[in-house]
Structures are given as C-alpha cells and as structure tokens.
Image (cartoon, rainbow, N blue to C red; front, side):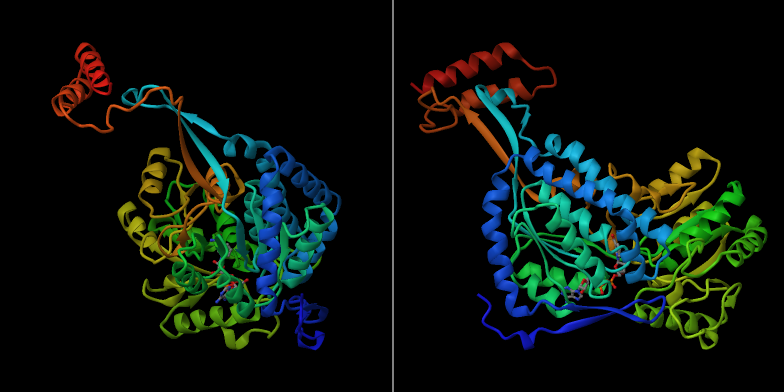
Length: 517
Ligand code: NAD
C-alpha cells in the first residue's frame, strides 16, 4: 500500500521541442514505489511464465492490431514529443516496432521451445535437450531518439520469453512512455506483467538498484557504465546498447550519386540523433572534390520544418545542442572549414540546428572522436584502403559502418576488417531494419546483441537437460574405480583415434560395464 501523500508526487512538464510549447504534464513515479513495482512484477511472473508461448503470442497479436489501427495517432505523439517529422516517426520508429512484433509472433515459439541436441556416443543411453527458462523481472531503460522501438522491442522480446517487464522510458520523451503504457494496458496484458515507471535518472537508478533479474539498457556510454557497475554488485546480467561514431567509407569506384544521397540521409535523418548515423565520412582523394560539391548541393536542398513534406525536424533534447556546439566550436577554432551550416554563434536559438558539413578536420578533434548525435558531418579524404580502415577503426566506438564501392571483393574485404557490430555495403544504417540480424556494438558501443534469435534467448536462462532411463544400477565412470584405468585408457585411445577403432571401443566398453556388477 502506498503510505505517502499525493503532494509528494512530482510532475514533469512536456515541452514540444519543435515549437517550445508545453503540451502536457506527466506524473513522475516516486522512488518509494520501486519495491511495489517489483513486488507486482514478481507476483505476475508466476502466471505469465506459466502460459504456453502460443498464449503469450496472442497478447502480442492484440498489441500489433491496436498499433496498426492507431498508427496515425501514435506517429503524432512521437513527433510532438521528439520534434521529428511524421515520415520519420512512422518509417523509423513505428514500422521497426511492428516488424519486430511480427518477427517474434512468427519465430518465438520455435526459437524458445525445448530443443533436442546430439548426445555423444560415450554417453550411451542418454538424451540431451536445451530448455529456455524465463529470467524473471526484466528492467528496460530506454532513450529518447527512437522512443517507441527502443523501448518496445526489448519489452516484447522479454515478454515472449515469459518474463514480466518494467520499463523506465526517457524523461525527455515522456508522452511516448505514456503511450506505450496505454498500448500494453489496452491490449489486455495481465495486471503487473508490464509496468511503466516515469521519470529521469533518479528513477532509473532506483529501479537499477531494485535487483531486477536482467537489465536491458539503451542510452549513452556514460550511463551504460554506471548501470553496469550497479548491476555487477548483484551479478545482474545486462545488455548495453550504447553510442556510436559510425564511419562511411566511399571509394572512387562507388556509385557517386547514390553515395552522396546516402551520406546526406545517413548523417541528417532524425537531425543526426541516431546511434548509427553516418558521423564520419571518408572519401577517396581522387573523387573528394567532386563528391563534396555534390554533397553540398544535396544538403542545401533539404527542408527543415514540421509540415508533412519536411525532410528534417528539430533536435529533441536541448542538452544535445550543447554537445554539438562544443564539438563545432573546437573544430572551427582549430582550423576546420564549414562547407554548409553556420557557426554556433550564428544559430537561431530554436531546436532546428543547421545541417553542417565540415572539412579540414583532424583525427584527434572531438568532432571525429566523440559521438555528436546531431546534424554534423565531418568529411575527410583518404588515399588507400589501408588508411581508410585505420581511420574507421580509430575511435572507441564500433556500432555500424558503411563501405561504398562497386568492387564486391573489396567491399567484403574491408567490411571484414572493420571492428563494428554491423557493416552495410552500398547503403547506410539499414542492418537494423532486418530483425533477423543481430544488433549491438563492439568496444564502447555496447555489450551483447538483440534482435534475431539471440534477442529472444538473452531474456532466458539456457538450461541444459540430460535424461537417462534410470535402468542401470551404475555408470562406468562411477565408483568403484578398481581396475578401470587401463580399460578407460584403451577405450579413449580407440575412440579418439584419427580412425575410430570400433572393435576395441566395444570390447573395452563392455569390460567396463562388467566391472559395475
Ligand atoms: P542517457 O544515457 O542519458 O539516458 C538513457 C536512459 O537512461 C534514460 O531513460 C535515462 O533516464 C536513464 N538514466 C540516466 N541516468 C541513469 C542512471 N544513473 N541510472 C539508471 N538510468 C539512468 O541517453 P539518452 O541521451 O537518452 O540517449 C542518447 C544515447 O543513446 C546516445 O549515446 C545514443 O547513441 C544512444 N543510443 C544507442 C542505441 C543503440 O541501440 N546502441 C540506440 C539509441 C540511442
């Protein structure tokens, strides 16, 4: 029972970033309620985990249908809360969520069902299986840039496996958090199976300390490290999906027009607030000048705004503007050249930042080494394949990358040498859209993978089971050992020989069995 007074509940004002207007107020979850959330989640876990996967899938089907019916309203909520244009809300946030639900509906039963695996001959008479047992209560903490899919995809993956889920969505986009809560409630999920706690880092920290059975975190490297430290205290397993500084490498034999359009979209979609944005563009010297001219023309043709035909909306989080500003100021001070966009001192002051292509940057600048998460695109020329790979691998991140060339062998060779969770050839970002592929980072871009089969199994304990009929009185490797050593020696030598010696294997096995009598 909640013994605290209503006055203690804090409210968060929701400001639409594109207009600066307050559009709602949302109650923050008081941290004293954290134990009640966990209690409820644990109570519901018993029933939910006891359902057959096919029964849990029925709830996901309800959820999917509701989202299809209300797609337009959901897109508007996302756009109001983030400032992104409606086209991006539907294409890059709602569609991937629905596709993930679809994928899970089609594959979860097969992926999470008990599986028979081979039993080696040395273990004659036994059968082996793998079972997937839900972990319990999964805590999902999500960011603001794709507030729907980055919360819902881990949630539905965990739910399919039989876990109950607590979501702590970003305080920067609380309307979407409310919308998710409402969608699950109206899809009929049992009480306590899905709960949403609203608030910022204090609320997130309180839930992290509340001892969930698994933490799925998407957000910055800084917060990821804090969460991993807290989780380590109680040996709580985690998945961390963190930042990126993705390189795009364009060789001189690439389809230039396509690469130019891809660079503009890859860098500026969602105002560059994409963990897999093209954040560094490396172009081979022989085409550098031509490429840059085409890129400037393309970028200058893009429309920023809020109407249906706009290409790029506003930034979402005011704090992110400061990160972009600091990187740009340092680069300009150290001699970098603006090809498009404005100096930060000339910015208008609203949340629409100029789309900035910048050259003459150095590898040790923040703009190359740190995540920008904004509409900045530094362009750097390179000479050789080796140099491009060295540049691309030269940061602490490794989330996604792209390689542009018509030479398939070169593309695959370079892709294989990039230290990156994913690589796209002649396209950008798109690996994330295939739910059959694993998603996750290397180095400081994160720990673990989701999407794909792995994304369902991480939320389960993988349990090994062996069955014996239990007819025999004893096993050959049990006591007593008397007289068994020479028989085992011959048994293993015959078994592991380059060409198996079946005769000696059988002879010694039978001799060992007789010793058991
Ligand atoms: P953030 O780390 O500031 O916040 C993410 C979430 O963590 C929010 O819900 C926040 O309230 C919560 N949080 C903050 N401090 C916490 C604490 N001490 N304990 C528990 N929870 C805490 O990140 P952000 O600014 O919301 O998101 C942007 C970052 O997310 C970027 O770095 C971006 O690259 C990354 N990101 C990664 C992926 C990916 O899949 N790899 C996807 C999207 C965004």
